[in-house]
Amino acid sequence: MVIKYSYRDLSRHKCHFFLAFCSVFTVVLSSLVISSIISKGPVIFLKMADMHNGEIDAFVTPAKYHNVAPSENAQNQFINYT
Image (cartoon, rainbow, N blue to C red; front, side, top):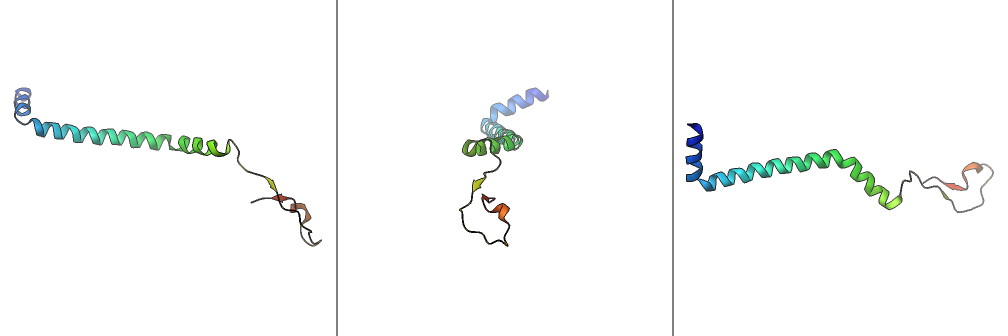
């Protein structure tokens, strides 16, 4: 009985059914896409970072040489830690 009534209502109001179907389909599809992006987000950002610098965590470059006063720490004069 319910199926017969539903089919009759569907045949009468095709536009309403199509709008309801499209809205539910859009909500489900967008929630699946957002869920996938959130779950894969860290991997995506890691891959984007690796494209520019490779698998490097830090860059150690020499600093400009300058005369260091004896009171300063002479151990850090050749490495730029920034």
